[in-house]
Image 1 (cartoon, rainbow, N blue to C red):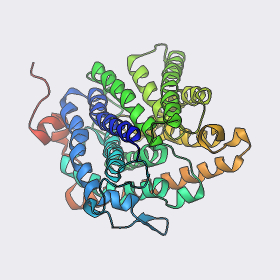
Image 2: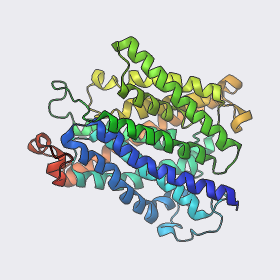
Image 3: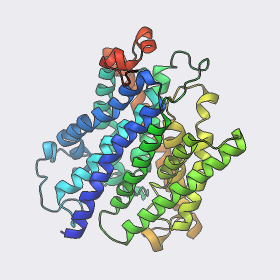
Amino acid sequence: MNAADTAFILVCSALVMFMTPGLALFYGGLVRSRNVLSTTMHSVALLGIASLVWWAVGYSLAFGSDHGGIIGGLEYLFLHNVGTEPGPVDNLPHLLFMVFQCMFAVITPALISGAYAERIRFGAMVLFSVLWLVLVYAPMAHWVWGGGWMARLGALDFAGGAVVHMSSAAAALAAANVLGLRRGYGREAFIPHNLPMTVLGAGILWFGWFGFNAGSALAANGAAANAFVTTHLAAAAALVGWLAVEKLHGGRATTLGAASGAVAGLVAITPAAGFVTPASAVFIGLAGGVLCYGGVFLKHKLRYDDALDVVGIHGVGGTWGALATGIFADAAVGGADGLLHGNAYQLWVQFVSVVATWLFCYVASWLLFKAVDAVMGLRVSGEAELAGLDVSEHNETAYQM
């Protein structure tokens, strides 16, 4: 084991943990004031719930011994056999690798909450998230990072384009389709109630993303430095790209656009961060900002209510990032070449992984939402929705005026 690597991943684990409260602020500022606490609560509650699920069973299913390329074994249930000895990577204590991966498992179901904000029952959210972590997230993590079939196929996903972003976006689309439209959708203006809160959340996400991506090198080395730089440049380029297309399309560059553009770039570079050069990262981010700006309009065209644009940003951005990895990957950076370096097969592998991720995660999430709805009901009553979920679900209000 390596002391410098251990110290680095300890810090990165804390950075990724900090992203979930950042997401709570980012999402919380985007909803109407009567739903800010319920929306914030989704992310905050999952800090506890997802961590315990990961401790009990999630880590074992994701990183236990491989079974048919589909799922891990049960030897790590309740962290049995997980201690301070080297783990899946021999330079880190097993417990440290586990907790670094735990922070990814925490934020991924929290990302989904942006789709069902302002209309889901809190208990239904909890039950769905527990089932989803076990039945969707853990298999995805095993497929890509735990030695499963996508890893064997050669799919490249440095820090979670498929495992985190596409999986959560597919579940978000399923949520929007099962739950239906919010009351007044298409007739009322749903205006964010606190954009400074959202910008603060975006800043925390950007900050934490350095741990998310650079930490996925799993060592304090050149690969981590490259991932840090590509992460920052992609976010910067996407912010500029989003603002430019927003100005051209709508006549104004907005604060919300700047925050959304930065997140779009961070999403797009996530699968590619350790495989591409800084120059490629700028292009990936710039294109990601433009594509995700267009992606947020899909819900109006296709008539689904993805309240906080999980599909438009994490779905479109994650998909673009995965495909871009197959185009721009450079063996001199990350050991694998993409299309532009003579390896067209890598782009095909990335395409297969994208299709498989969307199909599996959407269908499984749709079935889970339907099952939870049948057991306890997903959606609050019309009266509760009008009153706001802060009062109806949690008996509290964010602001006293």
